[in-house]
Amino acid sequence: MSDFSEYAALARQLAERRRAGERGAAEEAERRRDLHAAVDYLQHRLTAQGQRLDQLGQAIGIPAAGAPTPAPGNPPAAPPGPVAAPPAGPPAPVGGAGPGAGESAGAAGAPGRPGVEAYPQVGVGETRLALPTGAAPAAGGVPGPRPAEADPTTELELARRYADESDRHGQQAEVLARQPALLPTWSPVARALAVYAACAAAAAVLMVVMVLASGVGLVDGFTLAAWICAGLPALSFFAGYLVLGRWGRPAVVAGTPPRYVHLGFLICFVAVPVAYVAYLLLFRLLR
Image 1: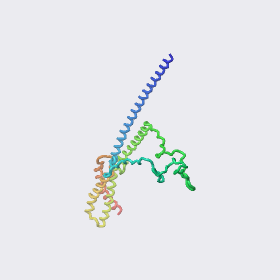
Image 2: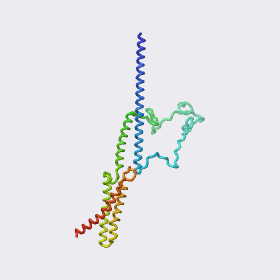
Image 3: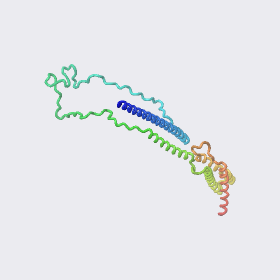
Image 4: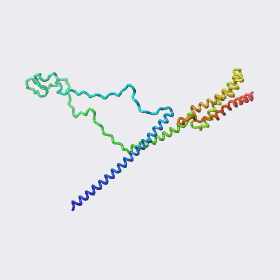
């Protein structure tokens, strides 16, 4: 009876172990599926990040990164050939003694036998070679301890954090790339207004120089009027138009940015004549 109870207890124990093993296998399979899903998700994120970085690089003139190609004319090095093994056989005899010399060599000879001498004794002043006290290490050295295996869950968590950090920096780069180099914090209308006004002010300065030159007879009245009414306003307008197209365009915006042609035309073709009229009024008031 005791044998049957022990057998039943052993069967129950084996059944419990089997169920525990099945549960462990199911949990391990579930963990592996979760790890594979996390790896696939991170792979998609990294691929999207790489494509976005390539787009940003192409927008600022940096070509997309590609696989390095070997230089032409340089074939890959051939693998080393087999190393020739030394010829098999007994080592060469020392001191020129060999078979057929009529004398036995090595430790087989003992003192007292004819034609055989004992081992040579170390003379005075010679150094006796010391025998090693321990076994010499191998030629490659003693291998160090194997590093501990990394936990996949911890490595995936670190990769996820790095991906989040990369997304954050990528968003900051996109925000900076959407801002032009000229007055990046200003609105497009305010930027265009400032650029056209600065160009009109420069044209007004040139107008004053030409008025002074006409006063000394270097410029006649018709030329001065033509430059004031058409030449200087047109130069200031095209200068502002080119400045907005060169430094007022964000790096990642496709197409032509708004340059507000009508606003610039109005500012430049009104500011220069108004500046000339203001100069005449000021000149008369000061006289």
